[in-house]
Amino acid sequence: MMRELVALTRRELLRIARNPQAIITSLLLPILYLVLFGQAFNLNSIGQGKVSPAAFLYIYRGAPNYFSYFAAGMTGFIAVTATLFVGANVIFDRLFGVLKRTAASPATATSIFGSRLIAGSIQPIGLAFLVLGLAILLGRLGLAGLSVTASVTVVGAAEVVLAVVILSMMFASLFIAIGFSLEQPQTYFAVVNAINLPVLLTSAALFPWGTMPAWFQNVASFNPITLAVNVVRENLFAGAAAYYPYDPEVYLLGLVGWALAMFVIATLLARRALAPRR
Amino acid sequence: MDDAITVENLSKTYNGTVKAVEHVSFSVRAGEAFGFLGPNGAGKTTTVSMLTAGLAPTAGHAVVDGVDVFRHPDLIKKRIGLVFQESTADSDLTGRENLELAAALFAVPRRDTRAKIDSLLERMQIGEAADRLARTYSGGMRRRLELAVGIIHSPRVLFLDEPTLGLDPQGRAGFWRYVQELRKDHGMTVFLTTHYLDEADSICDRIAIIDHGHIVATGSPSELKDRLGGDVVTVRPVRDDPALEGLLRAVPGVLSVASQDGAYRLKAPRGEELVPGLVEACTRAGIGLYSVSVKRPSLDEVFLELTGHEYREDEGMTPTDRAVRIGQFQQAVGRARR
Image 1 (tube, helix red, strand yellow):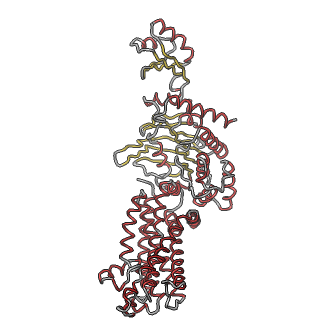
Image 2: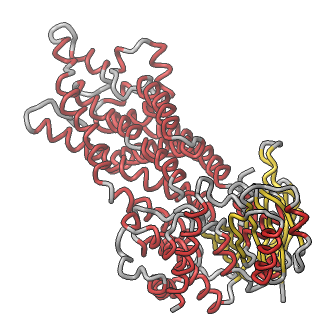
Image 3: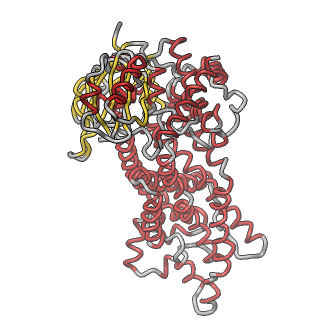
């Protein structure tokens, strides 16, 4: 099984590498968000003189400014937007016969799903850290940038990496599951758009926590994107722990729960899709 | 000789109403090339899908290479080779990468993989294009790549589901040449579906003719053609005459007469010897003839005889187009043999 998993993952990675347009497009969106939205949407200047620094820290849950809060939240945004294509590839592979060929081979549904999950998660993980690096660089260039105010420990860095990895895998699982359930690309993109926008908008990825009404905070608390960005922010910003009811490990555990649920659903759907048709 | 494929009472009904295949039974001997012949929608692909564990049957039993297909679908996938009618090779991978992937999925021993891939690429004449993306391949090259992928694990039974669909006559002849070589070298059993009657005639040891989900006849191409009782003589009168059928029946040597579309199809052991007598009898009766043609029995005739309707091979294709295409195919086969 390991040999087929490696071979199928290699196939997925080769396809990604041979499609530079898709890589550039997926890079462009978060970079534009950082460079345009992040620079223009300067919430600090709005409250200048009226909102105390302590209140800002509450609003941004320990982040020194909105851009830093937002840049850390971009890791969650990327996990959603950069994994979208993974499910679409399942549909295109079905349309072009590749999935039929794979299903006719002795490869297990777990390997077929697993290879797509691994390959599909690598890009958003790489992209998330590239964006964090770029956000820090923007600050060094005199623009609004990400200020990492905490001394990040090895454990903290590992937690940040894990949060990004698990969140990316969770969304990749979700989109692969949708890909295995639908047949037409148009339907896939309609369904995915109907999911990703509400999921993003009910998370703490982009909206300042302190400006959300209480009911919204309750909803956002359970959102897997919020769980992941909580881990990132608690580890990147000094004193941030005071603004979070739980330690990063607890959020990681919640995230693992989400990811496992999606993994199980996607595996079952892949098995159903690859089983002999009825 | 052992049977490589045994099928008993296989049926498939879609959505509880559409009967694609009904109570199909047949067996294929080991090493045989067995053709499953029928027009579009006859149930060929449905049967192949069931026998290759891609589709669950509504009823019936099938054993392929000693394995119960419906009890052990995972095992059957390891045992058989399958070439689909549509292209399934990954366009974003090279020919070699497609084969490497297939070798891994079919657990071809690692130590043999490279040599096997090189040998297949060479044999299929795609060695020079091995490191090009499959999307740059011509139709014929893609088909040969599909065949190489299908046999990477040296299966004992190879299923070919309309593998030459869309290929030009040369491409088709070339493809079948590779299949025949494989049979000769490895004793592979080949189960093929096609709606090209000429292909089935020249390649298959035995044929099953399927129409509307039922097998209407099974036998070797010559056995099936012999069932017609000899040559087919088609008499086309200038004007239909009620006396003509009786007149034709009375000509010595005529076994049977059937009328269709203003023409009369006569069966006779030696058709060409019948022509002078036919012409003379009609002339004497004052019945003008537009044409008289003699045909050795073909599978088209067999199909017409068994099903009562013309073979719907390529709807919309004129008889002239079809004759030209068959001629091209036969010439290409001749060239390939030389």
